[in-house]
Length: 282
Image (cartoon, rainbow, N blue to C red; front, side, top):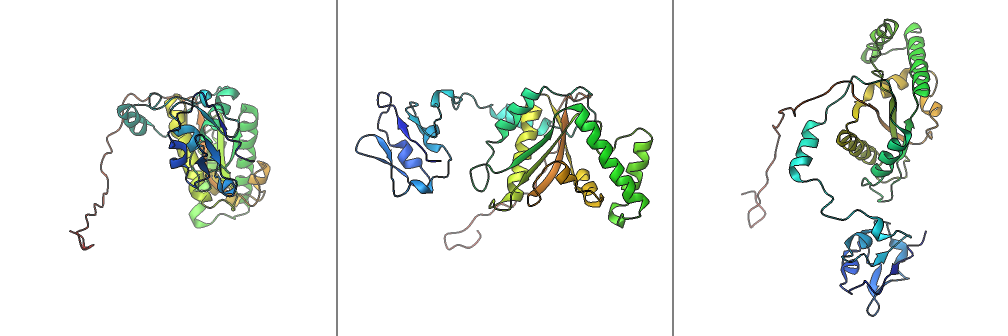
């Protein structure tokens, strides 16, 4: 898609901020107002920096209305709020049975689509189980596949734990899915320059957004491990393309537990480097 740069000349103050901040220099003042350079426009990475940096909202690109964007910096959380969010998010293992509203999930995923990626144009696929009936069916199919792997003695020593998972399921305990009403799997095509990182970044953003909304999440590697021993291709069952890089699964829903304070886990391994004038560590 062509960038389709539009300038409201009544609002434009010819400051050149959009020109200076364009990562690939596809915009120039010609002579007073910003215009795309035809010989460079193919370098556009759809970052929309030009729209974001315009102080008066005079610039539109890709048909985006600048007045529909959130104003900055007043829309940002303050540092104390962000600190509380990072330190206060918890791995939730107890959920209420009722599902979230589909519109809430839609809004969350569209927001998280703004997370940075190596190609700067999205590229991640968000596969989500939204309704309880689908989630229940998928849990049952996963456990049936694990049971078959146990019966056929196909579990490696590293994954022998799944014998206990199946036994717990038979006794009414859902160790893998924790009775969560929703499951999210983020995947990315191998053509992305950094698919593994893109997936983790997107899921991290989803986790923090969820926490800010009072929604619980749980990073879940057990789902990926379970899929690796089940005869049926569970990713295909979820209509995830076979060539996609698959990340963790994430459970989410309304927590059935309330946390009243942050934890105190503030130690950090920090490697401070100070180089002297000759390039030697000083």
